[in-house]
Length: 638
Image 1 (cartoon, rainbow, N blue to C red):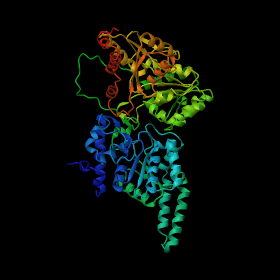
Image 2 (image 1 turned 90 degrees about the vertical axis):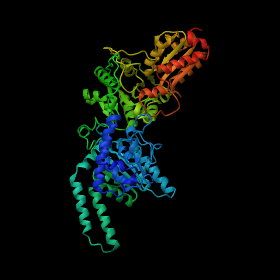
Image 3 (image 1 turned 60 degrees about the vertical axis):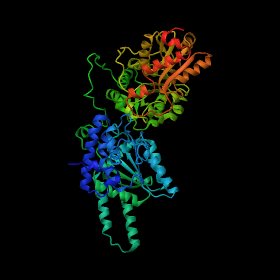
Image 4 (image 1 turned 135 degrees about the vertical axis):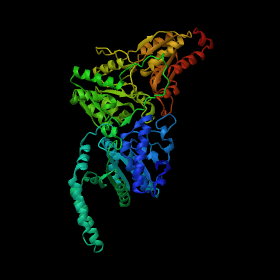
């Protein structure tokens, strides 16, 4: 039997379908998402919960003329399937395929590109104001998860929208959690609203009472409406939103297509700022996701069972992830020092702080999707004598940049930033690549900035940072460590001291963090061709080991810097500046990420495209030698 989904090439194909057909379509969308995400990986739970809501939106609205602005994108897969990308959905998050998030360059139906939570109401309000100023006519709807309401930016937008009074519909897709269970007073408020049957019954009774009033002329009708509004306000579950200037509908069953169609139409016809509170179930329709929505928020791609197995290949090293190492090391540090505490912004599992929370629940704080607050909260803790460690993704720390400068570094407070996912992150794509943190951190006074070559050095750097008595940051990549042994005793590293791993006299490779291993591999390969390379584990971006840098600049005279970060303002730039200040005449070639946003692909493919693997480092060293003396590349002799 043919699928309805196979006949849907645009939202227009939904028009005229019956509710029964739309419900069948919802089941088919869920099946397609589960099958695809099981192969490609991706965000599953929230998308499964948003299917009926998405169908209702596209049957009522006229996209792309009407604008739907999604928040983050963890609920936008059904939208992609209904807007002309069904035949490409199998390429989700793959190199050259469709993005895992809404992306304006991908489809005119993606009104705004997103990747971080809390942005959709602001962007939708911008659309609404521009529409009115330009005299155009179209509806604007923001779809925001309840977890995104822990982001302060969302409330800034609600406040502004209520004040402006423009026609704007905000749908709160309330599935009771974001990536982890939601925290905070607002989450508790929505839960009370969601579960209070007395409020729903009272509203229904008021509606019935008003309908029984005889409609004798306009004044009576208007008076009745005013009475209804007054009574609603007395028991309204949405009183908080109404106080901001929004008309409130809800809580509504977000899985009832007919109900959601009706309430969306009513909200648009009503005009002004309207908020619809839709209750959905994360993971709906897929038993594993319903049972464990947190675990099924994001799925990894399935292992390729058809890949050929090479008998000579050694078994893979079982190494912990860098995030796990952070969590376990913080447990050790908290046992040693009662002043050490951990802070996460709604990412306890992703940052490894779930391990700390399990061991010391009173020493770990999840502040919700509120990165700015997380940084200044840490500053307050530090002022009072604590040693806070903020575990945060590089791409999310960007949101706390002002707080990092003014509230932490300007006051020289002992806050440690454990910066996860620093570098290229693969299939999550450009919204999540952590490629700018060195540039904005190394220009900030008072901070120490480090990057470990492996998981054991990460442990030592955490000890170094916590003991430093000043702002400190450690950047490390996504994924597993190298499988090196872990020291039983945690020992700090002398601040500003690099590590010479190999000596050589033709080229000196200064590698940072994740680039140390491929730099060593490149040096060994070059040695087979008679090219002698020194390899330095830089360890510190700030302060640099100026003494070792000047020494190798003088003795070798040729330096290659390697970093998994943007070239502009990065580690290589710091090396150039330091050599210039010292008067060195050493020649420098920098390897890093060019001035582009690197698109989704496997991490290995992303690194190779930027020349950040052994082969790319070898080529850079040969190029530096070739530009001086072509024969040196072959002989390794001056």
